[in-house]
Image (cartoon, rainbow, N blue to C red; front, side, top):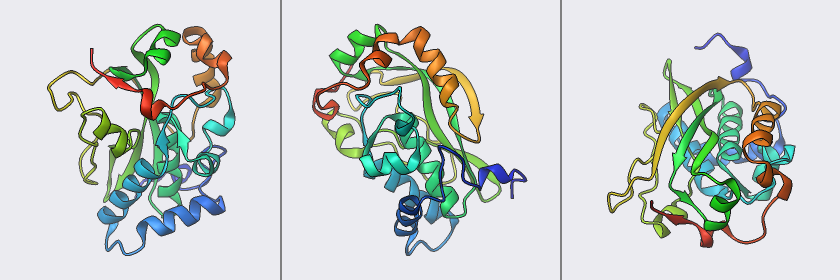
Length: 221
């Protein structure tokens, strides 16, 4: 097992000791017969139980804390990776969060106009320690959103990295990784906000957008 106790213990944002996180994790892994089955169940629960929504207030700590994200039922990629990491720790699976800058062709016209770019900084995944090795899982996009946009939902087999869908079902580019920012024991909230203040000031200033991203989102070049 990994020698880093931080990857199994609660932290300010990956609050795996919160009652709703523990309940969520317990329900997800009920009936799972081995470690692979447990992490797959946790991944699918995190992917589907929290809707992907970048219209949340990305300046608020509550958008990054697993227990509060679960209670809200919505969050963007950083939020959902924290949920999976917290649920994994609650289930006894070491977990950390990782980040990368990506070019993402799935957004909404309003969000794209506000950001002024299709490069999403600090896109997040969860790194899980399974059967003696780290594997990456990305629970960001719920299956119903993917279906509406002509994407296959991203699956995770518990053995190999599952980071993104490079193309949609029509062969159009969906996402590409540009810069790996590494992994962290907890969400680097202040570091992310400092970077967003420079690159996405309008997004931060809005403190959340009105509307429903699930219906406004589009995919394509």
